[in-house]
Image (tube, rainbow, N blue to C red; front, side, top):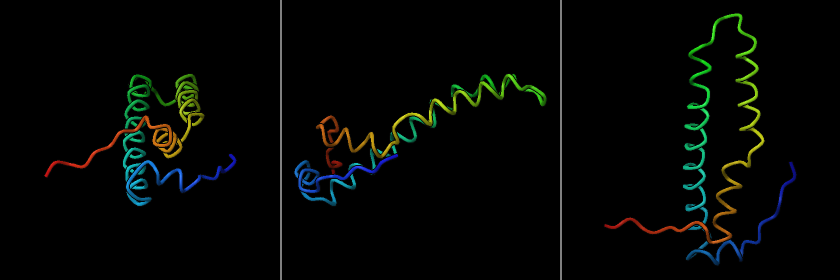
Length: 95
């Protein structure tokens, strides 16, 4: 996978400063990662419930689901993309 550079001036223009932008993107990355884990567990749950020791068909189903999730963009890439295209809205907590 190739690494893409990120224009820091453009990145910083979406928030008060670069550190705020990094904090927002990292928080969103964690949210996306949690959503992906939950979705993967929900899809694997029925397969694991039916699984027996010698069941190679079930192993193939688990492998296919896992490969599907591996092909997706990583949570960090998704959150940066949302942030840079102004799809990601953030606010401070009310005190």
